[in-house]
Length: 140
Image (cartoon, rainbow, N blue to C red):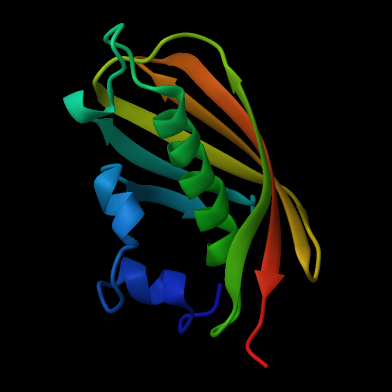
């Protein structure tokens, strides 16, 4: 990981956390680029709940998109960015308002395309999983 890329600067407090991560209560807890993994915490607020009192699936999807894309972002050189091309979600059980743990694992890091697997858990139980395909964009 470059010490000058956006992700490194964000961890040091020198670059802003993405607004969406703030909305989701996202905080990077651990990153191990040698192992190709990242862990992040999220907080589902009452505003995320559907009429059944469960976290709406789109909010869980946003958390999984955040954790998978953030892992790819951590691997980028300065000036490059990441865009999610495809995000396939599987919902396994309802989530409630409160803390959730997101984990991402880099399956393949190509020059322009990365494949990432993500999972979201609450109270030690898997809530949702995702596979993501991300594109690396570089400045001209």
